[in-house]
Length: 485
Image 1 (cartoon, one colour):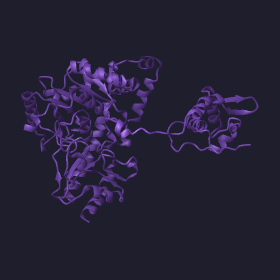
Image 2 (cartoon, rainbow, N blue to C red):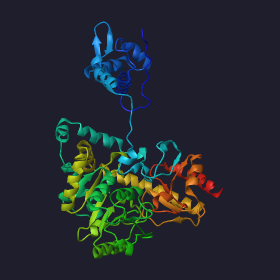
Image 3 (cartoon, rainbow, N blue to C red):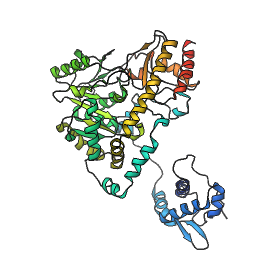
Image 4 (tube, rainbow, N blue to C red):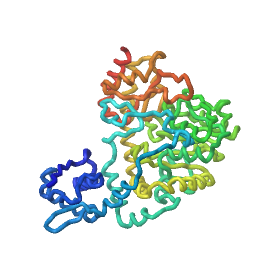
């Protein structure tokens, strides 16, 4: 008789019962369980896995209900042969692979080859992860999030969000964005001027696809957000890298030669510079004079925890030429992937229609949960906690840079979650990173943020959103010891 030695999945997601079900389903579909041989008794499997017998009984019963197993009186549980019929027949019909398609010739674009700011997938295993775009697990409001998620699981809520919304967004979420998020940025918009997106990234993509063609010139900051540049390059080859100084994007002649311009005025990506009001007014005046459409990515606007908040560029927009893009992923967690776009109603109607062709609308259950999270004040409380923690880390990191790296360029900033550092002209920050990894240190080399050839190699970025506060000082000590050697 066949004996099976089962092992639970190598993760702790879900309950024990769901992990047992996952283990059994994978074994069945992979063909590792003989359909003529009974599975271990519930008592035996419970002993093998060191779990309660009832947990196994419930898992078996659930798989019977789902059609993966059948129960035979006095014989035990067996794999349901019908569940495998379609799989077996398909495998028999499939001929040996004779693929002869040259995909390099067929593909119109090959985005895999574009440069990107990549980070190790196991970044959390490093003791000193000075990287951006991740979140601090200790600060995530788990109990508040669970409460809102339970609300989404109520029968009345399911009946509401489970329907195909076609191209509509959750009205309660739109209301929270309209009445709570945008006024804090000085932006007054009507509901029909707001569109929910899958993070800021989709907002950038939608705007680019609607505005650009091969003969239109797209301007962007250099250094700047590399994936925005990559997106624009899909739709036009007329790319223009624009100058950035201590006040952010410079509205010079190059700016005026563009049809559209992308900018991050709240915290310039990656230098974290906050564009002052006078520069914003100059930029909008230049945009009006030259008929330039401006895409404003309000990156990390919530984290201006040093000094008074600066209103969004959109708040100064008098003729509707600024397309505003915001994100909730930066404050909640990057995996949540929810953002929003604000623009004149005519533009939003077209963006909504284009979004429908892509994916109809962002998942309605997620929109419902975040609407509850905003409405109950949990987002406000989270921003306060994040701001207090980031302010402490920002101050500590700044003091350490002044101590260990006198003469290094720490750009003026009003907060954010990273510091931009200019090293000696001879520094190759990519080579420094390879050495730093051996000491458990991660940071972001700066050359990836620059456009064109001959990119400077001596800049790098130190993020502090996901590194514990007490790890900052020892990490910096180790990093600058490497820099000196």
